[in-house]
Length: 124
Image (cartoon, rainbow, N blue to C red; front, side, top):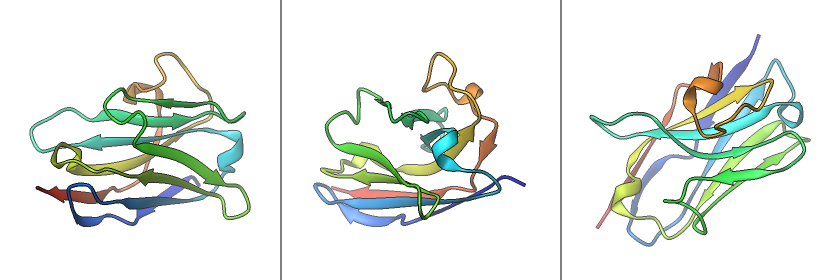
């Protein structure tokens, strides 16, 4: 069965960096459309970045140039490198997967499999 387990969240000061990991089992990340989403208290879950099977990455405007999505096929793991973090990046971050990429790519409705989330807190 498909399973996604996130790790790497924590508390950092503004301007700092974190790397989130998402260990996948039950499928191959290189064959799926993978994504990172986040949800702040009282807000809707929003797309942060996605990575298609052939390697095309898509980013939300709010993180473009600061975050990088990548995968390690040998480890079957998805990553989100987050630099220049801002207080508004504070949220629970979720890993997601789906067999097919659909438009719009950052829409959470297009992903069927989800991890349990990891908290990121950025202080000013």
